[in-house]
Image (tube, rainbow over all chains, first blue to last red; front, side):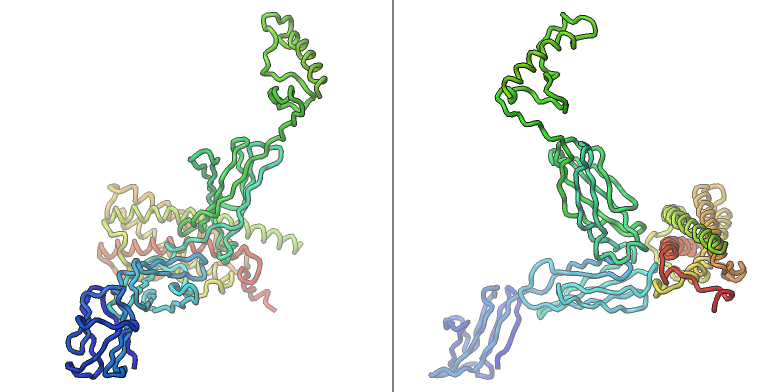
Length: 335
Length: 195
């Protein structure tokens, strides 16, 4: 018969060779490797201050050829610390789920038991197949002021620990982030971005339990976010974007009346519409500054080629027009 | 003519539901603020558990999604009529207990009482539109509770406000259900209309 035993890290372990007498001549192996006699006290195997590396199969043999007299698998581990428990409703009003984990590993198998009490009623928490550390509860009542009490107990061969959460029905409502966030430039509008998104698919009835949204956006070159809260609809047009700058945009959701905001959605990037720059095909044209005008080639306004002091009549345009003609002719020669 | 009346009634119903939803939202927000003020002024622990008190309508409901429109309206109306009486009583007790020394609490209670009254009117109108007509007032008002000590009255007040906050959320949801097309929003036909 093969046995299993669990021991704490740091413990002193004494293994007996089954029903063999203390003074029997035996040989012990660990994972098939002979153990030095210095670890024996008679036929007992003594392991002092065990550590995790000493987990394994220990076998005791008698005589020659060896007869296997006793075998055990030693698991070295630790008792469980207080588990971390979280409960949340991302599908209100259908129900909520609780998930848990241990803050540090125990290195041996653990068993989890969860109880959910609402008033005097014990509710069933159905364990998910995956992930294994989660279960879900269907609401039997809505709009109750009676708190829910969830107790999680984790047990292993070396000890147990538990934790309890108490909460209101409304307090744990937290939707999943909005989905399918899309941001697009608006043609001919250098300061606008159109953002749209969808309700999280896990939210079962957005018509009866509408969500509100929080949108945040910033140009990549700045750290400061702009925020907009939207009480209805699943789209918004940003109208104060910096022209030509790439933006990062995210959206969060919350039930209109209760609970907390979701995590931020996956970030999307978008740059507002900009006019296509004119292509300059000659060396002379490349060295000139670009004009934003869509009219035919004109001297750029920054080019100071005329003397404002010589202006007559309506202004500098009269004198500069002559200079402009000269430049236009120059440009034509090199097209 | 019948079609025009029906269309008019539908529009009126939607309008009442929309206003009611907004009023419920505002009411809840004000009740939550009032709860903070009440707990502070009455020297209570905000996390104190209050057992269900006789006469205070409980918002908790099972199978909420299966209720008909008429059931929703009737349950809401019974609740808010009860709250109207309970808040009026709380206001009177608060004035006797603290008088003008705590006008803030008195004003906040009075404001919420006004909202509860307005919401009650909305519900009565909605029931009239369903050809149901609201039930008599006497049937909805709970019996007077036995005399309570000062501390018991304070705790009962806490329970009243907590349940009212829950009801405000439930009412907004109920009214949204009424505006949805489909069986969940439907109302049972009145005896005159049933086949």
